[in-house]
Length: 162
Length: 283
Image (tube, rainbow over the protein chains, first blue to last red):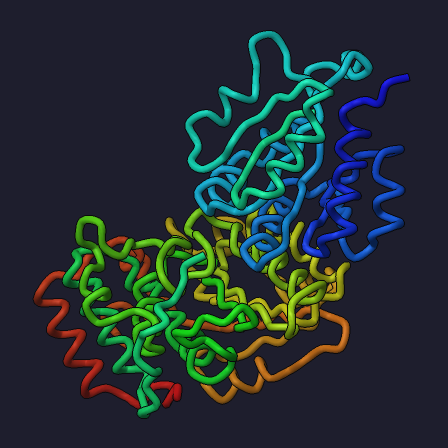
């Protein structure tokens, strides 16, 4: 079976983390079956901050202001909506080198309803398009690796939906 | 974030009293026709301790391993600017732009030289401080310390308690929170709007070392900040008076909002010039 975009993301990030101790994966109690290998291989470059998305966003900004390269990973609803003001103030206006990785509600999540999915006309672009500094990407699976590598080389906030 | 000029003047080392700092802060606020006198005056002694002697490497060189001072109560911007000028990080000319178009803002923003993070919306400074303290622990040359000055109103926000849990969980003994407990919020007495006490028991139960002190006694402040836990972050609950240092402003809600007219300014400056001994010398 072909690898999905989350697996490609973690694989690419692992390669970057191996070379660069500043790369850090920050999750909020999500990522079961994807993050374990990374967490084990790079314990000092991994943070599971628990269910604290608003604080985790500020923490990621603080890490970035001081030189770390955090990849803040969670589901779209929790990483853009629950913490919207922190995204706006701390990451976008703060021009923090934080890459927000939004995991899109897939078919598997439809059963969980609107709390775990974007519904109808909802989309990330409407939430992000008026914020400063942040680049937004909605890559196809085959584009994920290149995009992660390109964004790694650029200092500044980005949103990448997997 | 805000970079300090590499060519800035050396920090002043002359003795500087709390009253003189308050006069400079009042002059800025009066000239700009802005407000928040009460909130600025209540934390002058706390900021004086931090910028004066406690925080290390706060110099125009702005080295990566400097200690971090985050004023999460971003509406004390005028006081922060006065100390940044005293440290040689902001110039007198820059200070004079306070309140003018495109000049220094009334709330702290990270694009200003010497300002670590944008604050103003409450509950943002501590999460950012936790991130910086984690960075100090996990990378970099020197485990720098992070000081976050918070308002008592921020004891209401959810991110404060999320971040308190995170800091204790990650054993951030390089993180200190100073609570400017002036007991007045934007619309009344803090504990009448939403009871935030008992603060010691709350912070202790989250896994922090806690000290409650007189926030206008420089010796007590310096002593409390010198404490270094081996595994725990430190919360210093500083009992302060909103508007401290001038009877016109002390403990009065309206000086959260009112601008200082010419008559009030003159009276207040006279009281600050002739008045009682304040906390002491910061440098």
